[in-house]
Amino acid sequence: MTNFICTLIAFLTAISTVLSGGALAEEMKTKGDISSFAQTVNVQKELPDLYADENGDFTVLQFTDTHFTTGITFSDISTLKKMEKLTAKYDPDLVVISGDMLDDGNDGKFNKAYVLRTVAEIFEEADQYWSYVPGNNDGANYGTAEDVVAYLSQYEHCLVADEPDISGGCQYSLDIYTEGEMTHSLLFIDTMDYDNEDPDHTYGYVHEDQVNWCKEEIDSKKQINENVYISVFLHENTPDFSRAARNGEAYKLGYPTLMIRLEKYNIPKNQPLDDVFNQSGCVGLLSMGHNHPATVQCSYYNGTYYHVTPKPVISSALITIHTESDNTRDMYDFEAIYM
View (cartoon, rainbow, N blue to C red):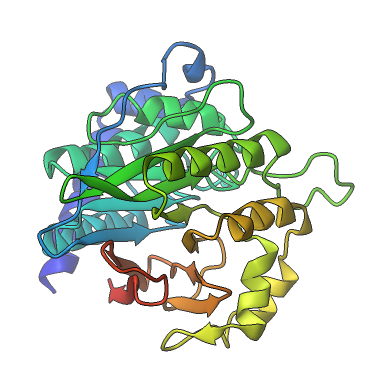
């Protein structure tokens, strides 16, 4: 009941602010348009190294598919409050939002800039590092995925960057150190919005230059530490997600409820990305959003965990990476965190 009352007060305060006029009310009229923001902000900022704890563990609290519209609807505020509460409770080493943080802006109610500010300020106030990859809806209207990444990059605790002259809104990596040695790296890849060359206008795919970047990035990590392992965060699935659903070893609840959905929304054009990861021999995790399961769905297949984060109205995911493990099977623990 206390959570409901706090959310209600926040909702009424936000509505009152809009109705009373001012900057926010004016911004609502433009739907928080941030178009061309990427042309004014350099997102190639230097990202900090991250560190595992004394046990070699590194925790990631992952949210996905929040589909915020204005940041001041009752639903938006409720989800924001839950994200804030869970971040404080679990105190993760990193929060990851894996796409579709924003809705597509076609429902009449929208404020892109206000949502981005509100989310970023939650983590600024908490002194919490967080990362983000775009989903297929984030760049649909009132600013592209590149604009979203540029807007977020202004915030100190938002660890995002974009490799120049490569397709998509962002490609970057974060390194994790254990006892002074880089033992693990996190890769963030934009899986793009829609495939405009497809007559059915289906979901987008990772382009060749992005695939090449992934290979080069993994190779560069191996040059630093030949025993390094990689975890990948993205929004949409690769073909191996379907193979893992059908042929892999389920982690606890596993994949049964998701198999049909994963196969229905398969993206064959992402096969080159799977090929790079499989050939590397060091990718232990692919973690995505997009499919909106009610709880954590995860399967171990060919040495890699394929993980789908649940929809936020029900739960989020806590991933613990045991960086000192010498094999991928024992390297991860996954837990559904109910909101």
